[in-house]
Image (cartoon, rainbow, N blue to C red):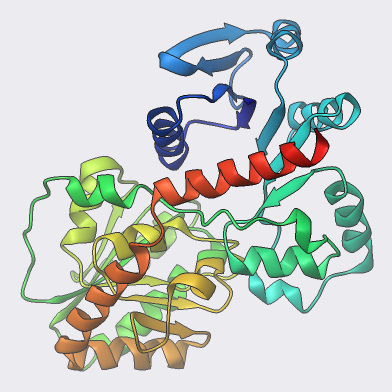
Length: 349
């Protein structure tokens, strides 16, 4: 089986996926194309061989490589659509990782988008949504269930949990947000909820990790509150140390198809407070078991207040988070993906 994988950039969860794919599969031949922010294309082959090709060379490489399966992350970009067409007209299996909408948007799907999605989504042989929420949306827009294979999108939790981190917890209950500081993440809502609690207790703190267009204005608005800390963008060990030294993870976002930061937080044993409009909430966050699913600021305040006042619940829910996420390993994601490839390859052979 020969597979051509196409990603926009080598983000950490992508490189983890490829590393597990490389280590676990001996009979699979594959090449990986990264398409973003370069005049040329980076082609990664097995055994860490990297080629840099221009567009014409890339097309020649793809034809010469003769993949049985073309796997793309999404459908954005002219290059990606060309590969879709190549797969369609050359009889290759086309597998697509795709989450188009967050759960809240199930209720309102305008007819134009529904027609567009039906047209485009008729091309792939198999579509791999991150989890249950993505699968439900695809069904809603008319994708046959036989073409849907949940990928169980995750991070490499085994690698994260094996890292030697520095534990320097304070005597305060620490709430943590990680993500882009943009409107749909609703960081302002989290800050408002925290400030409401902060009026009557000083044993709490809020750490906001990330950057974005609202970073400066939000930071300036609370510069008189020492227990709200903006770190800017963090990655690697710095980010993981921040997780392990926090107590509760909060992602109050809307229009969030998945939210891998929830996987990360759970890998480090944190309870999670998130919204019903975050895709990962469907599969990973269970009310009163490892966190809370909220929608309003009042619900957010109540969830935060309850956990601060019941420290034993933080520990209990943290243990449950680790237990739930233990089923969402990178090895399982790779196996789900390979099974989808194999099943649909068998159907056309």
